[in-house]
Length: 178
Image (tube, rainbow, N blue to C red; front, top):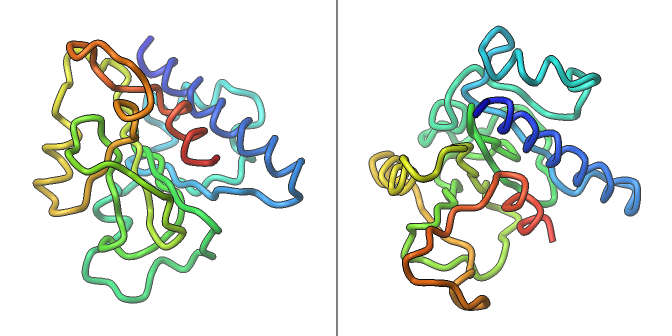
C-alpha cells in the first residue's frame, strides 16, 4: 500500500511536469529516480502504470549519494535541466550534478528555502509513512554532509505547532516547479 501510494505520487509528478511541458513547449524539470530497480516492489508498482516506462525520467539503481558523487567534477553525462529536484525509492533526483550541489528538502531543516537555484539538485525523500520516520531525512542528509532546506510553510501558513510539516512527494514537486 505504501509503495502504491509512492508510485501514484510519482505519476502525479510526471503529469504535472507534462502539463507544464505542453503549456511551455519544454519539460520544466528533468527528474531522476534513485535507489530504483525495475524488479523492486516500487518498480513493480510503477510498471503497473501504463506508459510509465516511457516517461522522461532517468532511473538509477544507485542511491542519490552514489548517483551524484561528491568528488566528481564532471557530472553524470546527462543534460542539465533548467531546474533540478530529487526523490528516491524513494528519492526523485532531478538533474545530474555533483553532490556538492545537492539540497535535501526536509521539513525538519532549520534553513528555509528562499528561492530555487537552477544550479542545485533538490532531493525529495519519498518516505510515505511520515509519522514513524520523523527526523530521518534530516539525519540522512547530515550524515552524508549535504545541505538541507525546508519549504517556508511556517512563514506563509498558520499551522498548529504540534502538526508535522511533511508533504507528499508530488506536492513538494509542484511547489518547487512553480
